[in-house]
Image 1: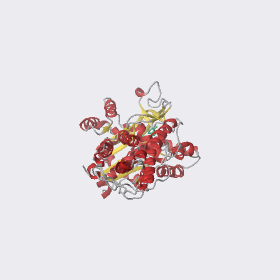
Image 2: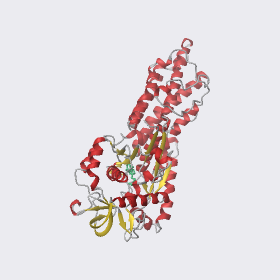
Image 3: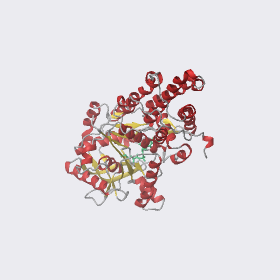
Image 4: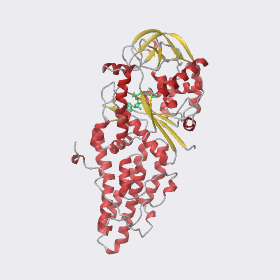
Amino acid sequence: MTNRYYLTTPIYYVNGKPHIGHAYTSILCDTLARYYRMLGREVFYLTGTDEHGIKVQKAALAEGMDPKTFVDGIVPKFKELWSLLGIQYDHFIRTTDDHHKAGVQKVLSELEKKGDIYKAAYHGWYCTPCESFWTELQLKEGKCPDCGRAVDRLEEENYFFRLSGYQQWLIDYIQANPDFIRPDYRKNEILGFLREPLEDLCITRPKARLTWGIEYPGSGDHVVYVWFDALLNYLTGIGYPEDNEKYRKFWPADCHMVGKDILRQHAVYWPIMLKAMGVEMPKMVFAHGWWKIGGSKMSKSLGNIVDPVEIVARYGTDAFRYFLMREVTLGLDGTYSEDLLNERYTSDLANDLGNLWHRTASMIEKYFEGKIPQPGGDVWETRLLKDTLGLWEGVRDHILNYDLRESLAGIWAVITAANQFVEEKKPWALAKDSAKQGELADSLYALAECVAHIAILLQAFMPLTAAKVIDRLRIASTGSIRDAAGFRKPLTVPGTGIHKGDPLFPRLDEKPA
Ligand code: ME8
């Protein structure tokens, strides 16, 4: 296993403000990136914005602005949201960056020289909102087969990328590399799609229709199709086409995380582009599901979006991160509703985790003057601490398998067990019995250790809450957890004064709306 981990989000369109769907992918990648950093891997987390194309040109026009001024106004909204959500990316690429534009033009020139790009007349149908070309046969009842909207008849000269020449190679590649497209059911969808002949991809738009794009090299009349431009961000974002240290270190990407809406571009166009360029394949394209509202996908074009800034103002960053990672198995669709978020907040966060911390800290304050007690017996043999230590491997295995929900479920099972442990041990009763002082110390020490391990494990998911507990317990946050065995040791130090602090998750009716 190499020591580096290169992870990407899609680069988001800047035709409107970011919403929960965008926040989901970015939080997911941030959680993975933080965890891999904890494992001691050198992580590169790339995100950014996809700024060219008809959608953005139209949105700018609607505001009466030139596209560049318009996108310059939207990009900060994405960056501000990422900061609010604690997203620690390593680079934010904009497709309007000069380096990116030059990279795209260089790739196009080389592919044209190689014969993989050719110029031809195009006759067919065009769906403007999807920016897709369709043949007569592909239309569904005369409408766009993807979105069902009206299409326009087009006849124009364009440049085409020879996808068709690589179809069999791609099928063989996907079959020989079962982890290239995940989850498995999405791989099968792509293989199904590849049973039909692949048409060459039209990769330019005449300037008469679209001016907001990268100019096609050598043609004064065309700009580059937004997907051909956008996909290359994964390479230009780490320095390509220069053969620099960063590019050599991080390519091939370990995971392109995308929504299932854009899997085809990532699992068909992108590998073929790379193959034609002679560049190594990324290790994996992972397609996650959609957040829906009342049965429909949440999207800008449907106008049913939820603003993450409002949610965070009410529930806090960590609760929002927790909800998104816990509610849905990666790959499947999820239903967003504030009621569900509210329920998770109250039961999992305030009642389970918040209460565990609160009662542990309160009892240490009350019975041990706020200092971690010195255990007498072999507390590491207790069920609670055995389960706690068992979490390290469980969480690691689930995260490495991209199953973040299961890793959280495992952590919560131990939180529940710890709360039950309090009910069973009844430290308040032990405190009254002078013969039971050793058991009282052992019990509270075990609880403090359990909470300490949970806080360290939650760092990737809920960085603010984890940092609070780590600070209040006066334990060291972890730089690296190379393997589970490395952490089979006490985290807390008997005799250390702890700090209970405010409730980690205050009751919602006590928070200002
Ligand atoms: O497609 N549920 O950008 P985009 C879950 N620029 N995830 C969602 C979502 C939802 N309801 N809505 C959006 C583009 N997403 C291109 C990408 S990449 C080279 C170019 C997330 O702004 C999800 O990751 O439409 C989806 O794939 C992405 O946002 C689409 O963002």
